[in-house]
Each structure stands twice: as C-alpha cells, then as structure tokens.
Amino acid sequence: MTSPAPRREDNSRMDYQDTLERIHTALKPLIGEGKVASYIPELANVAPDQFGMAVLNIDGTVFSVGDATKRFSIQSISKLFALTLAFQREGDSLWTRVGREPSGTPFNSLVQLEAEQGIPRNPFINAGALVVTDMLVAHHGGGEGAQDALLAFVRSLAGTGGTGIQINGRVGESEIRTSSRNAAMAHFMKSFGNLHGKVGEVINAYCHHCAIEMNCIELARAACFIANKGVNPWSGEAVVDPSSAKRLSALMLTCGTYDAAGDFAFRVGLPAKSGVGGGIVAILPGECGICVWSPALEESGNSRAGSLALEMFTSLTKRSIF
Ligand code: GLN
Image 1 (cartoon, helix red, strand yellow):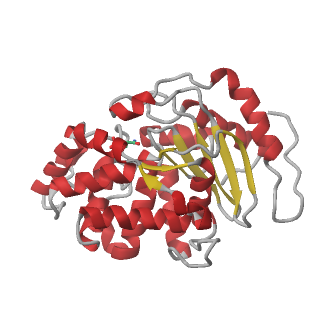
Image 2 (tube, rainbow, N blue to C red):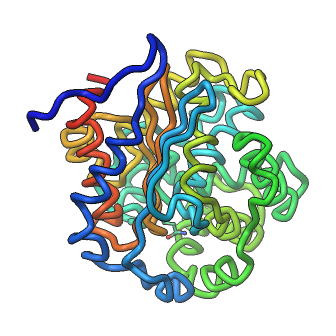
C-alpha cells in the first residue's frame, strides 16, 4: 500500500486512530464472511457481523474502533495467559512436559501425540494447553482453584479496568458437554504420564478458562506486559523476566495462530494469539498491545476479518517486528 505512515505525535507515541478507522471502513464489506465456530453450541449463537479493534500503547493511550468494548469469548487466547501463569509457577521445568515447535496440524489434532509419547508440540494447541492447565490445577489446589487463579491473573494484567472480567458459565458448560476430543487427548496424555490430575478436573478448568469474556481494549491491555519486556505497565510488576517475554513473543509468532502461523507471520509480521471466539491479540514489542475481534472464522480457526485487519495494520503503519 502506498499511503503515508501515521503521524507520530512525539518520539514514543503513534496516533493510530485514523489507521483503525481506515481499516474498519475498508473491511466493512467483508465483516461476517466466514463461519462462526459452531462445535461449541453456545458460540454458534454469536452474530457474525461484528468487528472491534483496539490498540493500547504501553503509556496507557487507547485507540479503538467498532465493537471494541463488547466482551466476547476469548477461547484459545486464554492459552497465552495460562502459559504465563504456569511458567511463573514452574519455570523452565515446564518445557519437559510441552514442546515449542509449531505443530502444522489443527489445534485439536490427536495425531502427533502418540508418535511423540504424549508430549504436545507446543502450549498453544489444545493438548499443550491441557498440560499447562494440569500444572495450574496442581499449583492451585484443584480445578476451581486453577479457574479462579487464571481469572484473577487476567484481571490484574488488564489493570483497573479489568475488575469486571468474568467467566461465562453457560459457554463453559456448553464446551464441557462437547469436550470428547479434548478429554480423549487428556486421557491419552495421562496414559503417557504427562497429565497428573483428574481428567475431569483439568477439562473443567480448561473449558472455563476458554469461556473467559473480555473486550478488545481489555485484551490489548492485558497483552501489554509482553510488549513491555515482561513488566505489567499498569502495576509496574514484573510478570516474567525480559528473556521470558521474548520467548512468549517467539511462541506467539511461531505457534499462536494454529497451523496458519506461517502464513500469518508472512501476512502480518506480529506475534499473535487467536481464539475461535474470533479474537486475535497481537503485540508490537516496545510499543503496544493490539486486539481485533470479528467472530466469522477462516478454515484455520482464525478470524477472517481479524487477520485482514492486522495485515492492513502493519501495511498501513509500516510497523511490524521485521
Ligand atoms: N475451547 C476451544 C477448544 O478447546 C478453544 C479452541 C480455540 O480457540 N482454538 O476447542
């Protein structure tokens, strides 16, 4: 694209409002194209023609457009927060139970688990997140403890505005009722000794983590610690050390958007994590957290309008990690 980069008001802050409005206008005809996730019955009821986007500068400046204050089911984006929390508890020993290679298979695939002895390829596919959840269950005295701990953690990452973030119990229960595939993975990993808790408890906590509801502004804000070398900009606390923040970003880039991660990196060029609720959270290191939401998905499970919006964002602003 040939448009000029957005104006920079000072050395540290870009004004992204015009960019977000241009993206919204350009994508309007496409919003709703694709398919809303229907394998979780409660998600099938979400109207596809919604779109919101927010950019949260680490100095607190907010830019937003469309349905950026409407909460949605964060689904697999919860895997990013669950990994961070489990890493705080386990440290590097976490990597003895889960790998860090892109899977190249769909997020809910079972095929690699047998060949790789119950060690999931990475923490952002369902099998990997189940192992991570198992760690949280062990550290927090059971499934309910793990649920509460993750909710408290995302609230703290989202700053003072995050206190109203909730788990949607209806979505959680709907997913538990249709969780045969996730339960199969969990049992299979247990047979290899890589799941320590009760399968039912782990599935329960995992499904309720996926059912957390947040809006684009809250999610962009909650991701800012990764853009800020591991420090929560709203509290000043170190969530993880700078090297671990780098590693989280690397995992987002290589594994954060399912088996479409290569194409996503090619098109967008930002570390990102998506969910089948239609949200995608991304970061621009040293600068901002970004979140886009539009429920209609591509075949891969990534939001169609969301992926296009992020692609436009890096093209228009000429800013990416590359
Ligand atoms: N809760 C969903 C599942 O386990 C999450 C999948 C996703 O967002 N990719 O299938």
